Image (cartoon, rainbow, N blue to C red; front, side, top):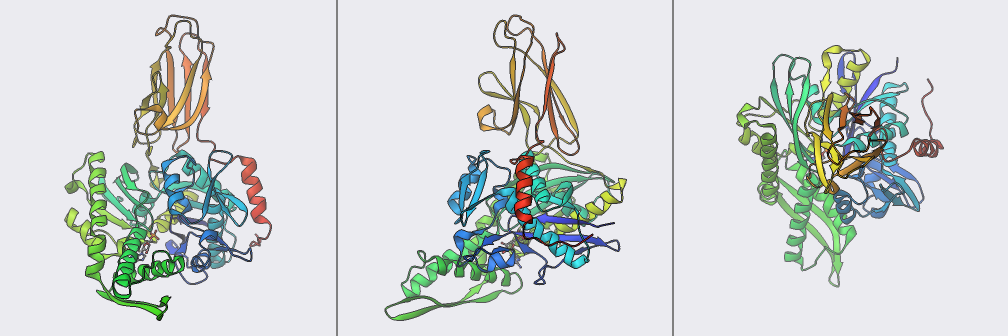
Length: 524
Ligand code: AMP
């Protein structure tokens, strides 16, 4: 029987784990690292590179290196997030035929599930090499706030990687599982503070014997360790300008070197209180080459990023409010994400809650470990590990005047079924259009359209008389179906809205064939 792997498909890094002899093990990649950069590149010679190999050449091949594509997956090209990503990314993002963002490098256009699939395939390869046997099944994690399209696109990415995705689970849920929390206590409230490279997520879980329920989520998809790095780069640029009179801002090569040095210095300062930044030949002018060399202290780092850390605490407060809890009601706090290794972050969280957060499992591995535990429970049919998730966003339909009628509020526990009676707005109206929307705005057009259908054959009547029962149903896998019933005639129409991500089955098939051309696999 082949084993199930757990994969944390992160914005910045990925991590893969498996349960061996009853214990979760994080699998190191070929270079010996337990996390692999979520990066894909096409080199000048046309060679495809993934992970560390891609990261290493990013300096000299910025437009051919894709990073943080998780920000784009399952989103629409015209969404705010994609617009922001276009501003920030050195690689080209174009609109795909399905209105999805696609990435163009070296004359080829890639869909986002395809990029994620290439990265997942690398994680699968890492696992297979470690286990010495083929791997087919996986549990993959996503942020708790991911909507249906993002989850489905992640599943498609798994398919492209040649994996059967047994389940998509929420990252905070996985983190809690890795600590085995909730097994002995009833209604334990757990707050997961996840500060990664590019994103910040707060989730509040309620755990009892066998059930983990997400009570609320909050966060910022554009806040993370890279912001820390950017602040350090700015500081270094200013210091260099003050001492050498040279502005490095216009020199991409120097900036990339500064970025790498900034990240390294930041990581050093997690264990020591001072470090050195040395960048020889960072610039030159008529007087000859110039070197950047300075001492960088933890105090300086803390003054540079203090406001970012404070902002994350405000988000924690917002999330607590949403869950209707006070900070004193939180029983456990879990730190997730490499950036939580910075002492200032740990201190801020400890001070706010008046308790020390859990950090027994490495924060950058804790999610993959939980995913592996969940995978093992699924194949062993461990009924003790039932997971209850919630809808990340509200669901409803568009109504007359451009309003959004919510039928299911966000953070409602799954499975759920809700119905409401609607009616016509004109005399003798025989058809209604049901537009299924997801989001928080009262204005219909500001929310995401998941799908639409028409219910026709309604008996002619004066406006406001017909009774049209609209029902939403979301099952434990998060599959949403919506039906509309004309109570008088019994006529009914329905759709399942998240059966598709941004790719059709034919497209997924084509991508798999494309990517399989040069692949070699373990033989079963
Ligand atoms: P993740 O997305 O969880 O892999 O976290 C990646 C982020 O964690 C990056 O911004 C890293 O620079 C940061 N990080 C990794 N290790 C450390 C460390 N020892 N100290 C501070 N930040 C770190």
